[in-house]
Image 1: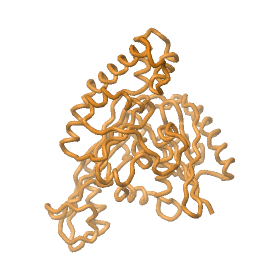
Image 2: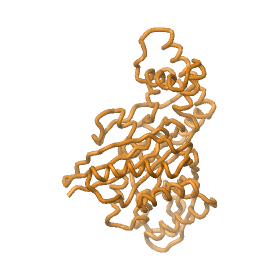
Image 3: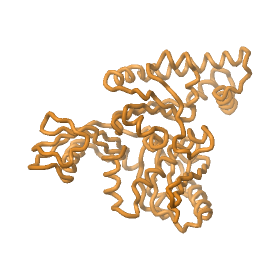
Image 4: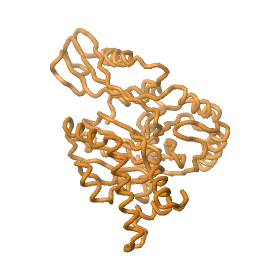
Length: 379
């Protein structure tokens, strides 16, 4: 019997749905579909009815194709500007060996110290455990001591935003849903376990936002989001060349795909302008300072993986080499789930959601507890 898992990613221009099929031998095949996203802007739903109907048609077609009655559980990712992130410390006092409840109590004290109003936790990832004030341990279960300290990395989103999405999915009769940031979902596809263990970065150059995250020892250890992306670059290009948005978008795509004439003033002018604007975005958002801070605190021998709608910025060699003091490279399809590199860049988050659904394996364990355990011990 084949197992089927679903993942949905809300992008700026498109909504992507991935279906992950696992055969009895464990081989995975992904089926990916997308529709235009005309009902979301900066994380806000513009028209709930229109969004409902577009998703209803998308799911109906998929369910018919796979002869499935309904979707019971769904992992959903997005990259909205409303995320907040926090590092918080917690602790627990115990006697004897560290038990599961001691871990949970330490994490709970970190959670309660957030003091956030109307925020919902999307990621709760313990990144450091310290036993009796001096011994750092990755997994302290079973160790003997008296005090367990923990540092937890949280990512949150405003609850009212998520509730609007829940209302849409309730109308679709999908009640068990979980939200995660797109970059976290994409990391399940674009980063190998080895890279996440030794230290690696992930930059997602999206349409509205650019996110940069770092992983080490199998954990998410740092993350920031910046409000610039491919759409802003298109707008600035249109203004500079005095052309409409559609033409500017075509020129930008042609440039990144190396489809403009190899010689000529127009190509050179576009190249210089794009390099100038991207450098400006980086500097205005103080990205260099953040990268310096990361380099001072973490080792990243695996470099930085680049994904997203204008990931081919990586080919602007002079700009990249002068600005980033890390090795940058495009993601590889180590799982063999995509036919083309462009599909990997496009569907990494939605397929990542489906992979998380597979790892959680909702059918056999409590759903909420699975979510907690996933962030606590996954790598």
